[in-house]
Length: 395
Image 1 (tube, rainbow, N blue to C red):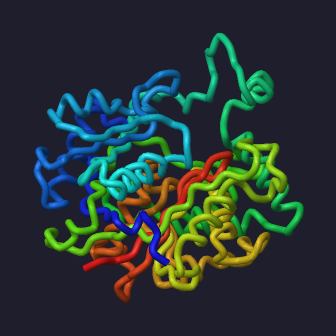
Image 2: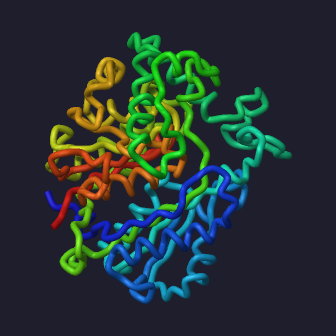
């Protein structure tokens, strides 16, 4: 099968300094990552003719969440653009990348810079993480049924789905812990990771409960940082001095209600639709995947993606990850090899794409998966919105 997205490659990746409360301006971080990605792609700023981000432009987003909008970055880099976009709607954070892929595949642009910048840790200051809707004068949409009841976090909303999964399938906290424990082991090998010190099962089980059954270590870690990639026409691959990641297939479907709690089966989420549409666009199968970078805003979301993508059956993710051997760096499906968002830091999904490209290029350093990975899957979101992308090594 030849899908239109196979006309595009991720030719370059770049990442700024990543850390807690860096105190750096969001545009400063963005330009650092952008220039690194452009150079990595063997290009100059003058070659970039497309620009995209998620979500872009601030608006009503919590402090430090949105990053600079595309007009700001276009002006700072003095880009001459044939195509650009910014906004939140679509298959989660991968929307910006998928749109860039389609722009390149259709000929609207040849080299698109895509970035995601967060400064949530600095915005948080010395206090605790700010809840969604706190201080708002009015609440509409689905949140009008949650926030007035002090359900200020996606952790509160998602906990209902996790509890249902535990009830239906006998999933346990000890099983779910393996997502966090695996992430921490991998983060120890990543110099940019926020938390690198060892964590034991006892540490996990004794951690402060946030919203049952999700404890502190089941929740991603706010940080500051920017990640950028360059999406190029496939013909550019031969002009780059390293392998590139070819886009094999993308998953964008949404067939159920875009809701945390009104999904037909609350032991699954939007990931099932995104995954199904991705596999329908390729002849590759789950058994072909060498490394998986799956969204872990909360531990259970990575488990939901394991099921949705067909690495195990529905309800079987607990048993699949039990003991942690299968998802370890030397396991049958190395998972979240950079430490994910639970220990590496909440780069809001783009860190996974950056890591997948490094793994396919054999440039992940101490955390490099052995054997030369040739196929990687990246999945973002998983609540009411989700998107996925299958990448293959080219060159």
